[in-house]
Length: 288
Length: 338
Image 1 (spheres, rainbow over the protein chains, first blue to last red):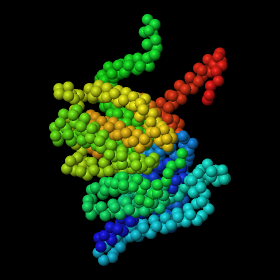
Image 2 (cartoon, rainbow over the protein chains, first blue to last red):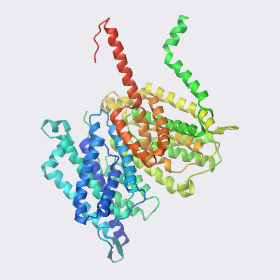
Image 3 (spheres, rainbow over the protein chains, first blue to last red):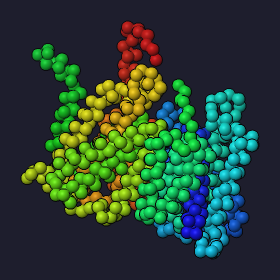
């Protein structure tokens, strides 16, 4: 029974990482750069939803609606401040460094606005789920449900809708997309917005479990790990990789408590040595 | 007479450099010129430069952004600290042994991490640094956990021991100079050119017979050795270490240092590391806002001068030279390819 509990916590943690990793993968695919401030966007999501719930006293549906709007605006603002001015830079590393700068700035920004003391946030439904000897916070189950729902939505958006095709085209070849008349600025902006909505929602879900503080951003490292573990630039691979990371972390508690982070990264490095393309990645030969 | 004149003309840069360096060496470490606090900051800047010099090889020449620097520094610092405090070794042998084993370790890590390419290598190197940080924080019986290790001896041989920060500066000055010369030498060697080739186009490099994988691993090993050396110096300089300065965040700061100074220039790396060590101290009076300004500053910096300070200087020199050539070509018109 303990194992069931561990599995559910593992999956829900994995879902949180997957929400971040999906956004990261979308950005990497769309513009080919890493977003090192993604953990900070996750944290910003938690703070913003805290503000909507406790400072503006909105009801749950209000939080959801306003949250999505605010996240989308943040995503667009982020893209225009960090990526857009540097899009024509000949060297991708400049964009990477600028996201590093953004991560420092965002971390300090939330501390100036909301203070350094971690804020508490009530879970969506209070109480503990009770099944035999299994005790679980309802929040974990909500994370799995909402996370799964969002993943399905992103899948439908990208595979079935026109906007998704536009974004995919931009990701595959920006120059060609521009040739056939796609306004790439809009589609890249949409990618950043979706990415921010995903990680912001992750922050909202993680808030009650971890307290809302600037250290939430460090969860992004697990998302990076899951992304690499799953396979290169592949959304499905990233999700599976993150769920695996969540499970490893959760079941790692049987062996050791203090080193649970170390186990995750050790597994990552071992997998990479054995299979450098990640678990689901396929080897694609490079084009000159 | 003529011979002497042409010698001077040829080596003007070197001679000016040597004079400036001698002046710096004798003037800076005096109580009247800089106080002990500023001296400490400068020393730290020089120690960071040693680590950033390694980044110069892997990022500047090889184009591989790595976050392993802080992790390697942590390994170097902790092994020096443990060898000197637990085993009672003298600082210099401890430093050498630490650098040696971290170098060997980075051979293994380099072989593993460079099975990945580009961004994914960066991700994995973050994982590596986090792993080291977790181990350093949690291995209480050996590393003392978050409390760290105290009472590390001062740097020195026998009776010649650095007594204060001014003495440390005199030693670090030569170490930094040596690192600078080594990196400059690598830049002009086969390895440096091969790395530049891999950075610009890996497939083309392979077509020309460069083993890209091996070249990248070698650059990783060099970066690892420099970082371990810097870590060891850090431990001997601060005489107290805790896991905090060996986090992933700190690696990001090293990357910012080299990007600020100019990624293609060793001198730029020196300027960047000194400036980035000095700046947070200088704007400390802004308290909470200092790091916010710092973060935004980095974004603006990447917009304004992506190639750093030295890139700006190079650009300026290039333009001046063009102008001068234009003036000359008015007399003897020579068509030049742009």
